[in-house]
Length: 223
Ligand SMILES: Nc1ncnc2c1ncn2[C@@H]1O[C@H](COP(=O)(O)OP(=O)(O)OP(=O)(O)O)[C@@H](O)[C@H]1O
Image (cartoon, helix red, strand yellow):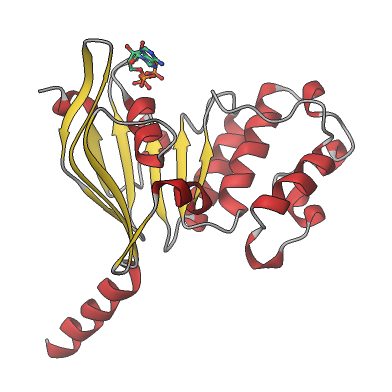
């Protein structure tokens, strides 16, 4: 019993390092509140999904949490142990895959990755060539991104989230444009590469988040 407590205690310490806390967080566009009174704490080592109808505010909440979009009331803070991080530094800890975030179309895949790793290195010292094998696109390494299919682009975006060396993954509609094979590739890797990290998913497809521990419906934050 005591041992279990100790193990649990250490588990909590080791996964609790980075966390995000929201207090009375709200966002409105003009006079329309998209969400209000969001009081949640998100811990590294856990996965969280936001569901809700089209236009309900999933992507908006994700962007507010990331610090990319300003909120209208309340607070969102990143805690690294006892330290509170500046909002300007949030991005260093996050990798986002979302339909509204575009890849640089004029680069080849190899050029894009060389550019990316100047800002966010890959985990475990992975090389560009290993990354390209991971996303299973070796034949496209010298092809310009503008000639990629939408599913190929989605693999690149997901690969960058899975393999970038950062603690927080934010995946908005992660399997959009993916065929069955690629959706299975996503499901296998999202579980593998979210271990010990903080994972957020915005989705209306249960198959994308079936493994997720905490699921929130945006409609619960309308009042
Ligand atoms: N920059 C903006 N200015 C004004 N309204 C916006 C802006 N961005 C989003 N909205 C509105 O906020 C609401 C929530 O949009 P959001 O994209 O967050 O929804 P969503 O739940 O992610 O939708 P979907 O499932 O279709 O992706 C929508 O009514 C949208 O029109």
